[in-house]
Image 1 (tube, rainbow, N blue to C red):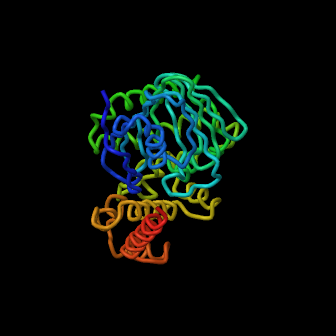
Image 2 (image 1 turned 180 degrees about the vertical axis):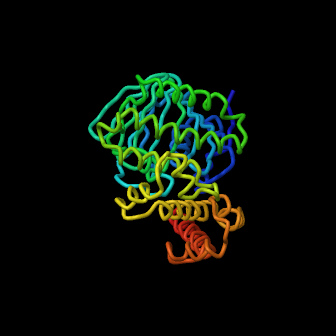
Image 3 (image 1 turned 90 degrees about the horizontal axis):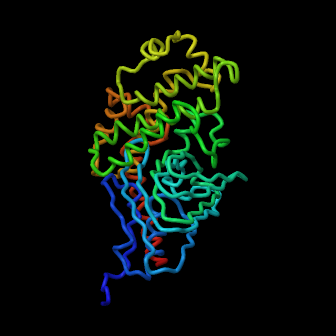
Length: 348
C-alpha cells in the first residue's frame, strides 16, 4: 500500500517565539522527506546545524516543546544521527543559548571546545548552541533539552564557558536532586499548564545555577566570600525579578548581608544593586516586546509582570536604556521581522 502523505511544508519562522505548546513529528511527512523535515524542526527550535542520518525509510524524530519567560523546554526523541554546527556566532536571537541536556534514554557523544564526553540515560551536560559543536547518536535516544539564554546562565555561573561538553552534577547530592527534578519535568511536560511550566522553569534555572556553582566548588576558599555573595545575590534577584516589592532592604535581609556591602559588591561590576535590578527588568521587558510582537500582550502587562508599578517611570527608564520608547521598540521589531520575511520570500 502506498502511503499518500501531504507534501513537505516549511515550518514557519515564527515557531521559535511561539508561546503555544508545540508537538512536531516527522511522521507528518513522506518517508523520503523526513530527514529534511527533521532538520527544519531543529533549525526552528534550536540552531542552524548540519544533520547526517542513515538513509532509511523508518527514520523518525519528534519534539514536544514549551516556551516560558526564562527558557524553552523540549522533549526530543529520534533515530540515530549526527549533528554538527559550523557557525561561530548566533545568527538569530533564539540560537544565543546554552542547551542543558538531561539524557533520558540511549546515549550521545558531545564535542565542543576541544572536549568530548559521552553521556547516557540519567546524565546531565551543557553545550553552547551558538558556537561550533558536534553531537553523535548511534542508537535510538531521547532527552530533555532546556534552551537557556547565554547572558542568563553566564550571570548565574562564573566561567560557564569552561563547563561545556562535560558530564555535570554527576557525583553530588545536589546534582542528584537536580537530575531527578528534570526527569520528573520531562515525564510530566505534556500535561503541565502554562502557570506550572512558568514556575517550574524558574526553579529549574536556579537549581542549575546553584548546582553548577557547587560542581565547580566555588566556595569561599576557592574564589572568596565576595564572589560567592555576589553570585548568591544575582541568583536571588533573578528568581524574584517580577516581585515589585524587591528592594535593597529585602534582598539584603534574605541574604543575611547589609545593603551597603551588597552595593560594594555590585560596584565592582560598575553598577549598583538596584541599578542591576532595574536594568535586568528592562532587559526582560525588551526581550518580551521583541519576541511576542504587537497585539499579543499590552506593554502595561509586560511591565507589571517584571516588577514595574509606575508606567511613567518605566517608559522613561526604557527610553534612557534603549534609546526608544517601549511601543517604538515593538514597532521596530515588527518592521524588522516583516523585512526579513520579505527578503527570504524573495530568495525562495
